[in-house]
Length: 285
Image 1: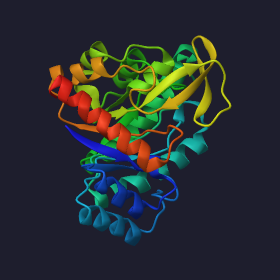
Image 2: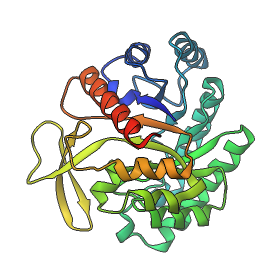
Image 3: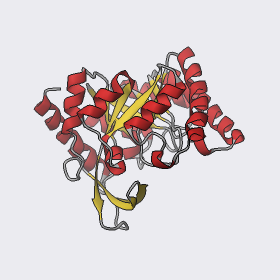
């Protein structure tokens, strides 16, 4: 397995600077946040080529483009069409950047509030994205994310069955799944099977109330809860089961560190890289 930095964790730097930082910290790649100032779907192709050249200069692969488009399940038809067009622009970028997968958000509401029509509508548009991605040899990655249709493995597999495309899979995110309060250990890896395309790594913990730096509120099945974004090992997300599950499954993809804890960006990425490497050695992944 190789380790990537999430450029969104370095959003205060321009993308070329973020690449330089990632390379200096020993990352193998960089997962690019597809929002300004890093990369956006209508960026001139000349600039996209410059991004690819900068990544090569730093010896970094670009395993995934973290798109923010989609949210099809609750949008009106005109808005869905516009999001689809944004996806198509990003698909062109992925070809130039030689990035294997593009993240697309299916939308909400929380899985425990969703109706069948939410899944059906999301599946229709994701299927369209997947068919175009296949022509370009690319994959669609849906992040298992709180406040979405795919905040649990069960919801993810249900949507996957509706989409019916083998180039659509999931980003496992134990931090998000901790927020949702759903299983994120070995069993989650086994259940996702070949539909596990990518992995995000970050830490969180429940707190009494939000308001301080690095805190936020979120609607879960328990009601509105407060959380603190943490450096690895300082929160409550136990990544041991996930890493053991990845080893057992033979996973040979990427792990992306996307820490947003209230520390200087370079400091928190360096900390998380050190912790992850220690954990990987412990399970001999």
